Image (cartoon, rainbow over all chains, first blue to last red):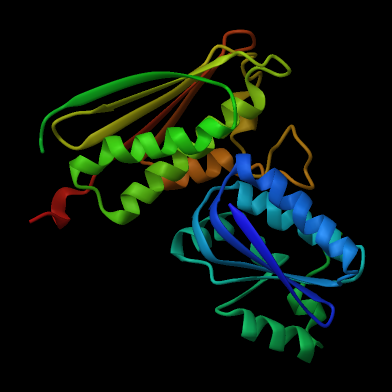
Amino acid sequence: MEITFEMIDDILISVLSGELDHHSSGEIRDTIDHTYDTFQAKHIILSFEEVTFMDSSGVGLIMGRYNKVRERKGKIAVVGCNEYITRILDLAGIYTIARCFVSTKEAVAAFEEGGEGEIWNAETE
Amino acid sequence: MERRNRIKLEMLCVSENEAIARNIAAVFVAPLDPTVEELTEIKTAVSEAVSNAILHAYGAEKDGSIYLEMEADTSGKITIIVEDRGIGIEDVKKAMEPLFTTGDSRERSGMGFTVMESFMDKVQVDSSPGKGTKVTLIKSLDRIHGF
């Protein structure tokens, strides 16, 4: 599994590529967190467009990053999920904490519009 | 095409073997003419079961084994067993509940068994403390799509 990053304003775009499982998710998690802190980002977009396999480790990865962005009042979005990834995310009810977009461009546009806070990330407490 | 087959493998409980196990399962099932959907579902379920064993079965012990057994009968029914001889599960019913995890709940989804149950026809878990865990995954391939 590989990961590349791009920053647009305060949004960290993380493009995942390859197979995401328990084995690969630990290193990916640390890399995202390190980059998020280094660049003082607020929001995170996780792109799954190039992910060829994902199991429930992907859910853990999103949950963990959600907890991370919440500390900075940021939001999290997932983009480019295929039908299998969507099924797993649906099972876990992940869309209560992360919004899903077809493309990174749409996700960035939604972040920059803002104003959807309550709907976007429902408070869990 | 309609011949039966069986394979049994022993592997070390290291996380590199998650990818190896699910890809072996895919290679085993591929000649039985599964749909792409069935193949992905089986790979995902095997990945979940093997990850569980690697994460939980042997604690700090690093040389435990995981056993992967796959069987196909002539009707297209696939039975996959992922077994370990580790610490076992005290409360199987609770372990199978969605979102339940004994790990870091900020980073672990606790969705492994839920995904297995959703992607396979049947999931059976036999376990008791000190006796290891045996996860049986069953799926009948839908042959109607075939020519």
